[in-house]
Image 1 (tube, one colour):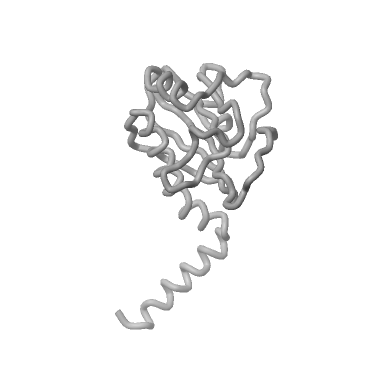
Image 2: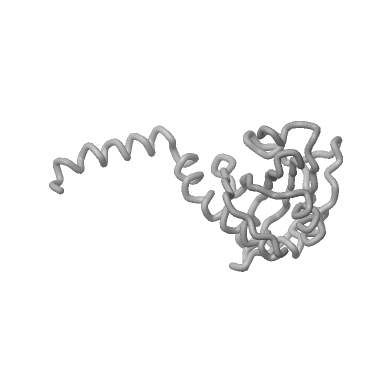
Length: 164
């Protein structure tokens, strides 16, 4: 292919990146890693899932993933990750597009759980990284779940409570 034919394609790519900015590029790049890490974390509990779809929150190292999960698998996952029931009046880390802002998980008919501690050992990843926290929403009627989490920043050594 000659260079003259590649120029319009390169210009289109440059305009797309400029219009979407870093947020779009970060989401495209990081959501695959998040899907891989969520799938591996759940597999450590003996639960194999597929069809994981993730999105990142802006340019943060946080995101949400949806995937099929039965009520029985949810119970196993809650026990394995030492999650606790998320009280309806509890403060949570809210993000536009987060689990509590995503249909059908924005209803009162979900089972909702969260980690009890900040950076619990159960959220260690195989590459040595970790998640800071995890929220799990499961809708029994659809057998689907939404998991919201945030990666621990590299070099972070102190923990802080989960607050908004």
